[in-house]
Amino acid sequence: MNILFIEDDTIETMKLHRTVSKLQFKHQITEAKNGEEALRILRSGSKLPDIILLDLNMPRMSGLEFLKILKDDESFKYLPTIILTTSENRADLLECYRIGIAGYVIKPLKYEDYEHRLKQVFQYWEINELVKA
Ligand SMILES: [Mg+2]
Image 1 (tube, rainbow, N blue to C red):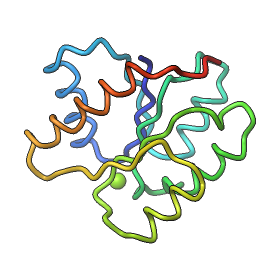
Image 2 (image 1 turned 135 degrees about the horizontal axis):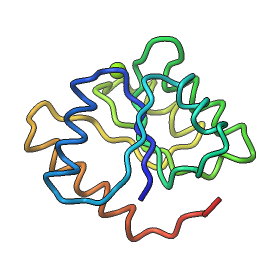
Image 3 (image 1 turned 120 degrees about the vertical axis):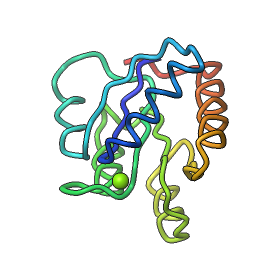
């Protein structure tokens, strides 16, 4: 799968790469540091990602702002977007589901738990039918 990974924290980005290579997944990861950069990538005309992994707390354009724009856009609204966050804030959770997400995963603190969760997310999306752009 082609995965657009939107995250401002470089440690988190390293963690994702480590997990993907450790689990020997062949996924292609494209990184964006905030919502603005992610939109630039999506609008660049290159192949759209299969899924998006989205952090909520980011500078410049937050995950929620990005999600609103994404779901308002005819070309991008079908991209399954999974929130990957440390925020257990119920207001965030409700707002994300209201706008339209494909999942909401809390990042566990322990690396082993993180790896386990991400493995399940990848495996679940691998068996899904995706709207190909
Ligand atoms: Mg963040």
